[in-house]
Structure formats: structure tokens, C-alpha cells
Image 1 (cartoon, helix red, strand yellow):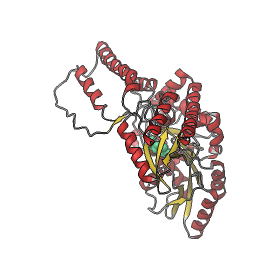
Image 2: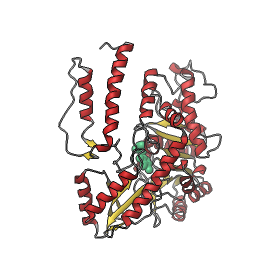
Image 3: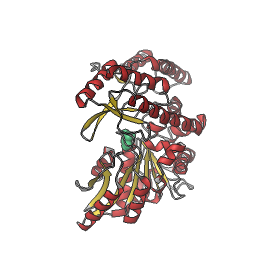
Image 4: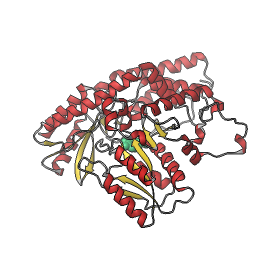
Length: 452
Ligand SMILES: *Cc1c(COP(=O)(O)O)cnc(C)c1O
């Protein structure tokens, strides 16, 4: 096939690929949730042209081993799903191949991306000065948030820089601090309460002590839904503390931020509207395929102050008509158009469809927690604050690990584990748009049977 596909070639490529994709989706519910046996196959490039059908078969084989993260019984880590309407939007965006990080180059496509950010800012009730950036994921978004905070609160000198997390904050905050070149000892871990939420009074004491010791506290990171258990820090109290102390208030909603779309979530995330920056991952809570994170900031000028650079080879560019140049908001200059992957599904299915799905996930996790608590051998230490249930066997770590191994061998459901307070816990997270009562019941039944 020549490099430039004829319309007929394009149809052939598209139809063969879509046939496979449709078959894959149709069979998702019946496949084992994972196969963790090592895969020996390598996929060398030989140089010769190959038949399309043969290549597609190879790709499907490559997708077999590992964890079926698109499947409805993937309940480990933080599930996503992979809305196919988003994948189709991505295909179109890539065929159009517009340059979306400089407004003048693609004003219409930038307007689409900006409408996604505007919609999110409105959902979080951020002020009119707010703006943001679509990134590859939560970690990349967090990096730009930390850099913006550093620039805004510390300027060029980051000596003594100190930021505050809890023991349940995602690793991406400390990683961002390190990549951003902040001092190695800049991360302070604030204690949590009995529901695993950051203790604002302890944070206040630490900030005071650090200031007296000559350090420069500049950022307080709250989490709206920890990865371990979905715990939500007291965002309102933390926002007030940050404001009082002149700290940048960051909210990591990579997992839990999407629940802002539900009435219960909005109540539990109260205070998020006070944040200086919010991260949320459409490739988690909006069920989009991987590769979509979001950074929202209270004042979009803080992002450009931290990331904007000029160069002679960009001298022809004129400022877009009220549209941002996203290159000034983050680390990437050239990248794909990400907005369409969110805009098309939101417009096609309607926002209410997402609200309903997320509401269902809250219900399902609550039911799973109730049913697991009813198994005599099982202990559920915390009521789920979002859609994650952590549990263990009353007998202790050894027995819980044995149960975990049995769930893995069983292969029907995929769960992951974590260590909280020095104790081994199994966690079950419901988030995919493909996961419904049927799969959660199946998971609970499997745990009941294997827990003995
Ligand atoms: C997943 C997650 C992240 C990291 O996001 P990526 O998209 O994986 O880079 C950050 N914080 C929380 C709470 C998460 O669950």
C-alpha cells in the first residue's frame, strides 16, 4: 500500500480495523480479566511490506497477555474503560492533523478544546479567570501545576521550598517536585485522620514550624479521592488554611474529580472551587481511552507565567482571537488535538449520561462494601467515600494475601492490593462505564467463595 492512501485504501484500512474493534468489544464480557503469564512473542520490523489482515491479527495477539483494562471486570488500580466514541473522535482528529497548541494555526479546533476546558471550569465553579490544559494524564498535569505554583509563590529562587501532602497522596506530586528541580527534602507528609483524610490542624502546625525553621512553605496538596481508598481530604478546611498561609492550594482529583458531575460527589468535594489548581483524568472518571489528563487553574495567567517562551522562528504568530496558545500553558509544543476526544462523546451522549454512570458507580461501591461487610471473615475498615472499597480478612495479612493470590489465579476479576497502616489490604475500584451490578455481584460472589 502506498504511503498516501487512496479513498478506497482508507476504507479498506478503516473497515478491517473497525470489524476487529467491534468483535473485540462484543466479546469483552466473556474474556478472563487478566493473564499475567509472561509473553515471549516479540514483534520485529522486518522491512518488507506486509498484508494488512495479517498485521491486524498480530496486533490483536499482542493485546492478549496482561490485564484486560478495557473489560468490565477490571476492578484494580483505577479503571477507565475506553469509550469507543472517544477513540473514533481521536481517529478523526489525527486524520485532520491540526496543530492545536497555537491558536492561529487551528482556531476552530482550539475553540473545541477550549470549550471542553470551559465546561470543566464551570463544573468546578472556578472563576472567569480560570483556564487550563489537556495533558497526556494526571502526572503530566501535576508537573505543570507544581511548576506554576513554584513560579507564582517562590519566583526564581526555590531554596527552602516546602510542600505538604498526606501519606495517601499520589506519588505524582513528589515526582513532579523532583522533576521540577525542587529541593530533595521539600515534601512534608501530614498525618491523616481515622478516615485517611489529611488533618488540617496538623498541617497548620507543620507549616508554622517549618516557617520558624526558615523554610518556605508554598504548596498544599489536597486529594479528592486517594488511589488507595478514594478518601477525600477536607478540601474546604485545607483551602482556608492555604489562603491564610499564602500557600498555593492544589487538588488532585485525577481519580475522584469526575464525581463532581454528581450531586453526592459535589457535596463531598465541597471546597474544590477554592483551589488554585485542580487535576482530573478523563481517562479515569470520564471513561475515555488512555492519554487524557486535565489541569485547571484558578488564574490562567499563572500557567503562562511559568511556561511561556518566545523564539525567532515563532515570530510570525499573532495572538489568537480570545483563544489561548496551549503551548504557553505546559511543556508540549507539538502534540495531537486532545479536545475532540472529550468534546465529541460529551456532545454525542450528553453530559447527563456521564452523571448517571458516575452515580451508578457510587451506588455499586456502596453495595459492594455492604455485601463484603456481611461476609463474617471479611473486614471493611472504611465506608467508601467514592467508588473504591478496601478490605482484608479478619485473620490477618497472611490470610488476606492468600485470598488475593486465589483471586488472581481465578482470573474472573482483577483486583489490586495496597498497604495501609502497615497492613495488607485488597482494593476493589468500580469506575468503567462497562462495569455494572452484574460484574460487581460476580466479584463479591468470587470473594465470598474464595474467602472460605
Ligand atoms: C491516577 C492518579 C494520578 C496519576 O495520573 P496518571 O494519569 O496516571 O498520570 C494522580 N493522582 C491520583 C489520585 C490518581 O489516581
